[in-house]
Image (cartoon, rainbow, N blue to C red):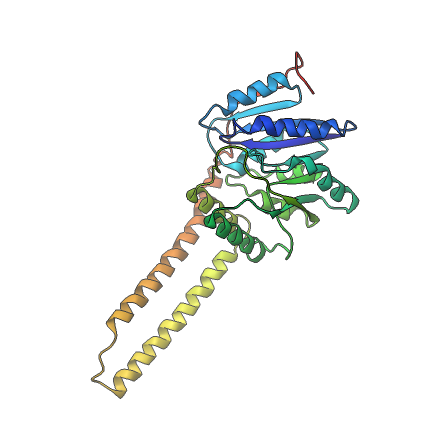
Length: 316
């Protein structure tokens, strides 16, 4: 049985060596399994790929892939999944926060309780930033209300999946993939194992506000039309509100012609309604833009180079 580890890498030169060492240590205790580690450099601007190639030279089970342009974690992950050959596939992060040392707890739940995918559910999160805490909460609300995930189910980037799930997932051809959404579209047999989230080994998160916003928008629009329905309902409610305010103003003017109409409040109301209209138009534009990009077959990623592990002088 072969286990494939797929890890997208970005600015992880200081961390990835320790991550690979941890995986090797875990697998040394489970020699009944073969394993491979697929590291995908998402066009990192530092020396990450040089370090990945060095890991290949030292470890025959490591494969490193270099992408020609930064496409984001999801696209880099799908690239790695297309190269994975394992009967089980594990995905995780490159920053040391993913507890790979307890991966067999996830695998045991996968096998013993008839799940197709098991995700790590972080119970002790290293989130010092209020912004990240708010982002996590927004993501949870989005996955349950927009994507329709069952209450209590937690989706994360740390998961183990069976081969048939990954075979189906990598068929997705379009740009802007959303991994957790794809997993939920493929199977409903998804479970959780509670895991601690460690502190980042070195450096800081590559997710800026702009990237997180793009991630949330992608989640909203990837596999659901509920945002469009919400926009329709919002438009109806504001139309009713505007109609009622108009009637109120006419009645007030008829009852007391000398009363001055509140132009300030009307102006403020126009700004609110105008903002909602622009928001709805922008939402529709997101869907139309994704259709345009998909029809033009923009690539999910472009591979510049692949380096496979060397048998000569290599460990593992």
